[in-house]
Image 1: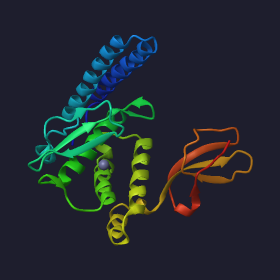
Image 2: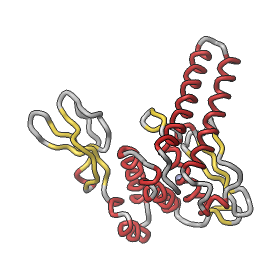
Image 3: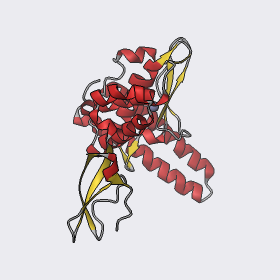
Length: 243
Ligand SMILES: [Zn+2]
């Protein structure tokens, strides 16, 4: 993969933003009962998202990756998908990739880096796992770990934000915990954070006591201030209901 210029990142983000704006207008029209207008707006939004996919292919150098040779057609936008991405065997050792609405936004905002990273997950990860007409036999969680490893190891190139990296680490930790014991050591060696738990650190304003929360309660609450994030022994962390 290759690092895009700031201008290219902006172009992808602007394209996604334009699509999100049209989707919002479509919702307004649908609320007023103008379904034909809503449908037309959604069609335009989908075409813009397809354009964002194409731009990301080019600007992040995904097309030039050897894995792309095993891709059947261009990854397509699927507005109905509840997953950020999906890869289906398409025959002849090739895979067909679809990207859902979740591939274009992170934390409610347009994210070119999240889009590029999701493509790395599907194309450099899952497409390569396809052989013949099916999946390589193996453990589902390990296959997800391999796909997320592509996202993690390419984080500098795709320009993932700290929050996006944290989310990927958290997902890798979840899959690691479900691995059969025999498959765990090699992941611990290559990515030592996998046997920890990702958490946000909050400090109590009055007592100074620190809590390690697996959920994000924002930068500040009446009683607590967020002072950082990291990976900690899982027994130190937990879900926090703080105020
Ligand atoms: Zn996956």
